[in-house]
Length: 162
Image (tube, rainbow, N blue to C red):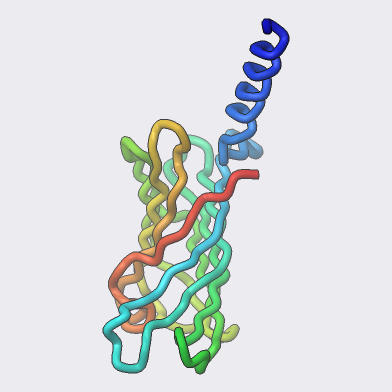
């Protein structure tokens, strides 16, 4: 009986230690990554866009700055027309610590199919969660010219656990 309890405790402890989605890199930086998978406004007459892709955030030590990258594919939901890609980069974006994660805000360098697009658009990235997995969720919100394409609502995703 004690052996089973010991093994169960060790398995639980091992899961708890490996479940943290945080990678500590050089100089105390924290790295998070994950997947975006969402839809734009479903009331759009042309149909909603299905958005999916990968993203990463590196929060730089205690400096209050972060680098963000996202690789996004978009296609019209249902019809499958107009597939295209975007890359979003924020360098040295401002980081604000929240009680449940981080808010990261900066001007994005955004491409459409590899060409510059939506110059000067502000991007807000929220990394949020709860006490068990912090952070567990991500959202990207676009302002300026990019909001005309991505929409004004947040694009949601998940923080992956390695």
